[in-house]
Each structure stands twice: as C-alpha cells, then as structure tokens.
Image 1 (cartoon, rainbow, N blue to C red):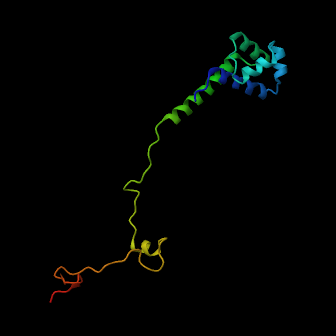
Image 2 (cartoon, helix red, strand yellow; image 1 turned 90 degrees about the vertical axis):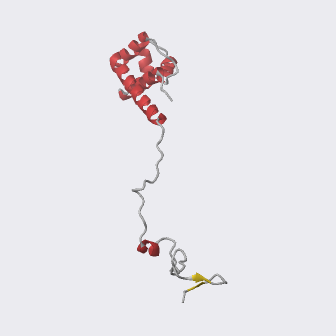
Image 3 (cartoon, one colour; image 1 turned 180 degrees about the vertical axis):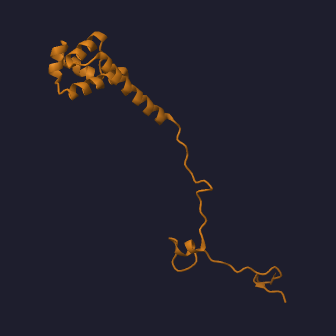
Length: 141
C-alpha cells in the first residue's frame, strides 16, 4: 500500500525528535502548537502547513530541507517495495538441466528401498518366441 506524504513527514518528524531525545511536550511548546496536534502530525493523521512544518523544524533545530529529504527517502523506499510486491512472481519449476537420472546405485539405496527392487521386472522374451494358449511365453523350437 502506498505511503501518504503526511505519513512520511510524520514518521520523519518522530524519528528526528526521538533521535534528539526531545519530548512531544517540549517540541510543542517551542513550536507553539498543541501537543495533541503535534502527536497527530507525527502519526500521519494530520497534514501540517508549511508554516507549521517550519516552526516544528526550528523547534527541533533541523533544516526543513533535511526533513523533506528524509520523507522523500521514505516515500522512495515504500514505492520500491510496492513495485517489487506488484511484480508478477515467476513460477519456479524444474528445468531439464535440473533433473538428474537416477543410476542403478540410487535405486538400491533410495528412500523406498526395503531390500527388494523398486518395481518388479518382467523377463523379456526373445523375438522368435510365440505365446501359447494360456498366455505364457514359450521359446520357439
């Protein structure tokens, strides 16, 4: 889901405030904005005016351009994540190069091996053999 500009700005403000170990109360007093409104701005619920952003940045001793650059990086990262999630997933399957034929040793030691061959093997009759009345193969004389 796309990140709104007010959410990116609010998150950047909160990160900058907490990095400077400042409280909401302190910043709200210095910026001359109510504590509740500043909290809503930081949570991305309210979209602050440019004058209010300038006052908050001054209270935090941060350049407005630094705040907006940080918010832009947040938006870029969110857009990249959204684009990656929207990209169709390629079905992963086996290619002919990935397949390996099982050798005789693999058949004898495979997970289904219980001392007997994996499949019964019928003897192959010679080409000159003729079936008799019962259906068994008898060698030609």
